[in-house]
Image: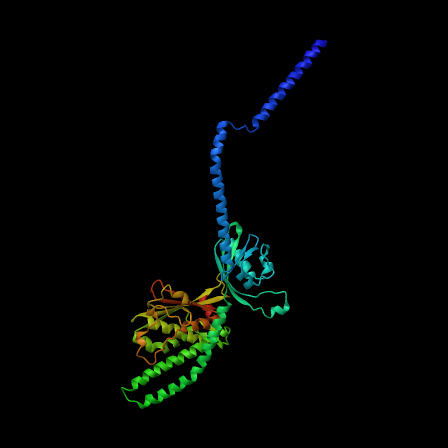
Length: 439
């Protein structure tokens, strides 16, 4: 019995030892094996190439860091502002020009703070959000009113006219370029003021010259009087130019000009304008056609609206080919869901002339803009004293008058006639005009 117990304990001990050996071999099998002579030689051959790859990667990283620093220095000294925000609208970086433009005195490099905490401009914040949502570059213009904690310094801080161009970046970030347009606006104001002062000074001598020319005109016999007639024409052109410039300057300085509004019947007004221009139209055998409500009333300053159609129809007459028609179409639109309580009057004036070039269309309403020569000369009026002579201010004045009435104007080329297409929108339509149109 004692011998049996001995052999049984020996078997258990041997089994336990065998199990430990198996576990030890399995553990050693997972450990890296020592390099053999062959593998050592192969490793030594790969080390130079590995070192070369590491050196190349280090050089590329160095070059990228230098390029990044170069671009950052360029942006830092750029004449336009630049700022960059993350996906939560936290300011990551901005250059010196942006700090000066937005008065970012509280921001320090490497400091991440919400942009709206640093710059109280909801227009800028909205532009950034719109860029991120649409994933397209956006532009915007607004008047920026800087905020300042120092009350004494606030008296020296002026509002700025800003233009921003934003673009979406990876990971929800947005970059914004800022342009301070205030110096340009200040220069334009100084220019306009200088021209206005000059125009005021020119009115008296021009009136005197015209009086002298009128005196000579009745005393000279043909053919000498034709030179006086030519002089009268040029003096009238200068007087018209001076007066137009003064009118335009006054309108731009006071967009909400004092209007003497009353009820005006549109069809009768257009007919009256055409009768004034009919001697010019007859030379080219031009006719006027009208389509739209017969009893269409608007609330407007009759003299100003008369001036609008006088300029537009005069241009159409000048640039229309002979024996064609100028068409005026009036229709009432509604702002939403065909609601008759908020109507908009749309007037389309279409001719069959040469139209506008695509390059000229964005600048049609700029003062003194002269585009395509085909629309800047009027041969049929060259020998006429009574012709209305263009001065490059007519369409600018038209736009300002319509803006003062709460309306708008757009220049296009008509797809059918190929001529100029002026589309006016006017909000003040009278109730007695709507009853017929919406009935």
